[in-house]
Length: 295
Image (cartoon, rainbow, N blue to C red; front, side, top):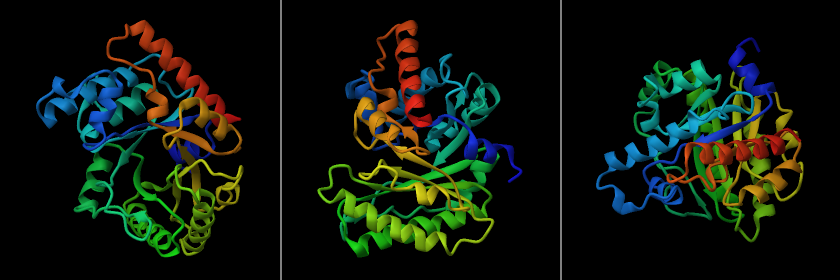
């Protein structure tokens, strides 16, 4: 492996900041930040506000490569600027943080206990635009709600099929078959999921390098075997609805697994906080997530 960016992702200490709330999840993210839905009257106004929130996070002194390896961006964010640079360029040039793009278009209706991804139209065109914006990799999410063999097989097949297209474009895909933390048979879901992942990893070519974003497993160390596969650059964990403290405790019990938190990262941040208050809380959050990721 000669690419310094891939080497950093593979061996670097830190975690991935998930700043990729999209159209459907943006209102909730803004509410948690203290901005009610009556504060904006169009999608454009909504995206302006959430970009201001993300810019405030990214420009904080504590948001640096000392603790953060990469940041996941929404497509709208990729096309906007931070301090007069496109967001991905700002992250890499000013912060040393790798930019990653969310490429999925949301979830399909529940079928066979899972929610596949919706179709991703013009994916190759999006990937080409991502390369022009100096994006390092991509992320795409689907969700497992119960331990249905057919459903989990379909979810892994879809993730790998699209992941191979992203590899072919020269980017590193993050496959995210999330297991719902509220599933009554969560541990069984994870057993089926790992088995299907191993089948598909065995079929990859030597130059197809991928990552995974997975729910923190019910059994500690459950994904260590996958981390050692030569096709796997890194495995990161989503917070999945756990509070930051609970997610950190669970993560720390899984050596090698690093965080890719969204809500758990921004928990407690508010538009009405002074810059000093905002920075102090973000710095504390970043440090706690970093500590759990390097344990």
